[in-house]
Length: 273
Image 1 (cartoon, rainbow, N blue to C red):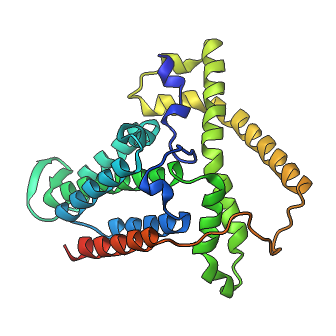
Image 2 (image 1 turned 180 degrees about the horizontal axis):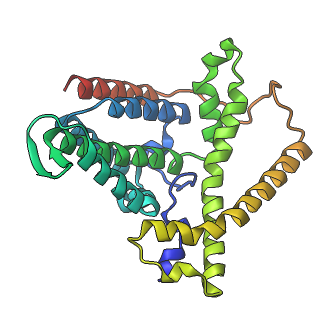
Image 3 (image 1 turned 135 degrees about the vertical axis):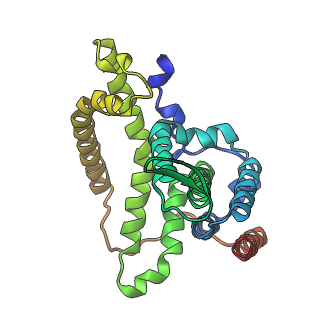
């Protein structure tokens, strides 16, 4: 099917969706710091109630940002079979603790493995939604500045935070670019009678084997893009470890402080639950 080769429509990380929501108007550093706090909080939740509560709150955040929930969740589609396989393995092969719900030979499903699988799935969805909301409501330049400002205290430890922020921003920005290149390669292979159209979706091994010939050309494209980026940065006089001014100055407004306080209070409440 044609939609099987449209990877870019299912890549939400690294793209910007213009809007006028309250999340769009928040300071980029506040959004990044809030996302980090929530991600760390969700990572430590290991019970049903706090995980479900966090999931509902994050869905509310997605709705508040104006990002379509279906579009935010579409980032899971490219890896859905891989995620499904991991969850099945976690469900069947986790340590047996508590009441055993089902057992056959060496396979067991206990209350512990079921809870671990459900919470892991909720965490993964939460992480994807949070990263998607942050990148979809923040311009690329603002993402770089936010990373620099949040990691600024690390400069006292002689850590090159500006360069690390630039690397992270380039990595995020290249995600949709490589998805577009991968989509083009897949369509070119399919038009020449490649094996992608003849492999069942559920056959993970066959799908990986059919995509193996695409790795080398995609790797060469990545090198070519990286070289072009280096030439562009050098032509604009970019020098690492040099102090530079900002075209736009950032100042925290009242809504930024309120949003950060709400995130801290909600995160503390989830941990207490």
